[in-house]
Structures are given as C-alpha cells and as structure tokens.
Image (cartoon, rainbow, N blue to C red; front, side, top):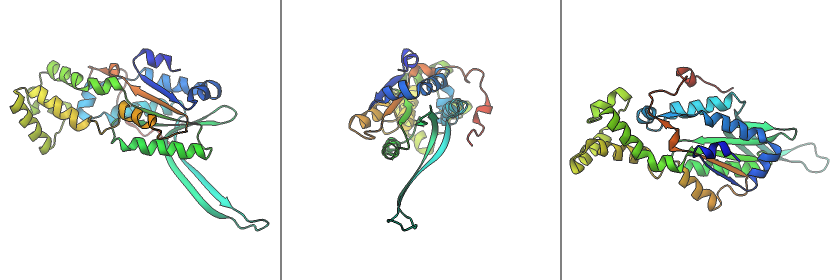
Amino acid sequence: MFDRLKALGYDVLALHHAEAILSVDMPEAERDIEDALLSLTIPITEIVAGGGGEAGLTQRLRRGLAERHWRKRNIQVRKLVRWGDDEREREVAALSHEIDHVKAFGPAQSVFALEIEWNNKDPFFDRDLESFKRLHAEGAVSVGGLITRGASLQSDMRKLLRRFADERGIDGIEALDAFGYAPTRRQRELIRARAEACGNFRQAWVEVFASDKFGESTTHWRKLQDRVLRGVGNPCPLVLIGIPSAAVTFEDKPPAQDDEWLLPMFD
C-alpha cells in the first residue's frame, strides 16, 4: 500500500484493517492521495518565511485533494428517541465534526476522512484521532487519515536550514529580511545570545528557529506514532503519512505553481 510514496521516503502506517478496507472498498482513495503527494515540493524559502509553510505547502496539498473531489465537510450525527406510538421525538445526543478533506467511495459510499497537520501544536493529533474514533463508532466514517511531517523531515530540519544559511550567506538577521522572516524581539534576543555563546550566527539562528517553530511539541511523525501506538483513535481504521525531507527543495518556488494556489478552494 502506498508503494510509490514509500519509494520516495514517505512514512506510511496503516492500522486496524485500514489496508484491507482501502484495497477492497476504496482503492481510488490510495491513488488520489498518492497523486496529490507525489508532485509535492516544499521550497526551503517557504519554510523560512512561514516558519512552517502553512500558506504554501498545506494550500497546495489541499488544492490537489480538492481537484480530486475531497471536500471540507461538517459531519453531524444525531440520536433521536421515540416511545411506542408517540410521534414526538427527543434528541438525546448529537455530534458535529468539521473535517477538512472528506470523500465517499464505491456503491457503499465508504467515507474516508483526512486531516493535514503540517505544523501545529501536537494536541491537535488528539483532537483529530478522537474525532475519527467517534465518527467511526457512529458509522459515519470508514477510515481516518492524517498527513504530517515525516521522521526524516523532523530529524533533518536543522541540516536543511543550515544548508540554506550557508548557500545564501546568512550572517545577520537583516539578511533574512528578503525571505520574509520577521523574528520577534524574544527570538532576536535568543539568536543574539546563542550567537555570542557559540560564535556562529548561522548555527545560532538555525537552533533557535528550529526549536521555536519545529520543536518536539509540534505535529510530526513521532508524536503521531506515539499516540496511535498507545491506542488513541482505536479502533477506527487509520492511515498515517509522513512527508520526508526529500520533499524539500532549494528553489525559491515550487515548479509551475504561483499565487493561484492560495485562492479559496472549498465549497
């Protein structure tokens, strides 16, 4: 499953019979997700400017899914009780969850619900997994999926940022202005103090930037894997995908992509 992604270094984990469900009930889901991710690139300048690339990477990926008819949906489940011949009904429970990417497949209309957590606080994983669990228990969702930063991207982040700093000759905060990096006063002080301590501005900036924007408490593969392996989201069938460091390029923009990717794309 997802062999084309695995060949490019993507992390892939399927749990609770998700692989069997996809192969039998919704093989198109695997093709959709692979096709949307295979052409995905992340310019290093986008990571520097956005501190996570939300306006670029996430929007491009959402656009790729939306073109394949994965839509944002508010899924609602209501439970009503009626006694005997009494025509009156009473609502005893209600659930409502907004999912960013939803698509139904096949004659049975099996539903795949997918979320992207590129660079958020890691409790968002708990929110997403618990939503999938509740919706699956009510029969509203067949499979839940999450896309996040992969293990290699998280571990290589400092190396990638240092390469950027070396290639662009970054030797001061002002040199980063051209890339849209606008550090706070606190961040400036941290960079200055680290540079004085180690005698290397580039490495000081890399350490502060990576810790501040891509630290251990953000959404990345290990945090997601830890949660599902201890049972969060169980027993909902899950497909988890981690974007690798190989997706990062040192071009200023993704090829053949421009600001039209940032236009609204959902109904």
